[in-house]
Image (cartoon, rainbow, N blue to C red; front, side):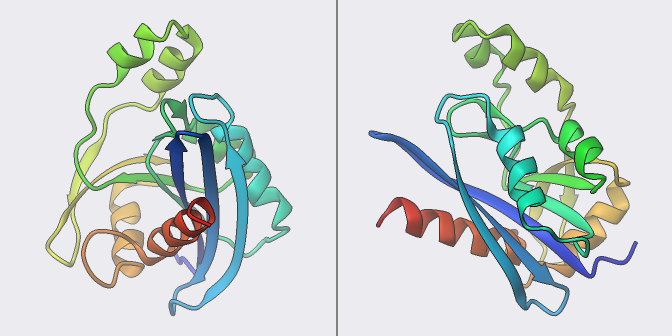
Length: 179
């Protein structure tokens, strides 16, 4: 699978006050940033999936090959329904984490939101992979084979375990939060 451009998505949030910025960075395979978009999502909310789809669609791009999202659970249990994003956008979606995620079902259940529990369960299990940099990463894949997802992550990772589109999106979100 040729990955000419990917959309990397990452957030930065605070719980005092409740605010979360979500940034999307379009990056070419040669590491040139080719687009940026920023939105807000609700801390402890249920709008991450909708906002990611809207962020992508408002970019009006037909040259993005895949989406890499920094996590499937954002901003205090705002679940990213990556399968829905995949089916609505037609893009392969890869959710990554630097370490194996804890089982969050108990925490989500304690907040009494059964829809979030169902959304969390729909994410399935994480898979572990070793990147070319020697670091392990945990991922969930939607609309793409695991081996192709690992190849894509390797293609966009220069150092460490964070692909460049995610690293830059996280920096932008953090800058928005801290201004």
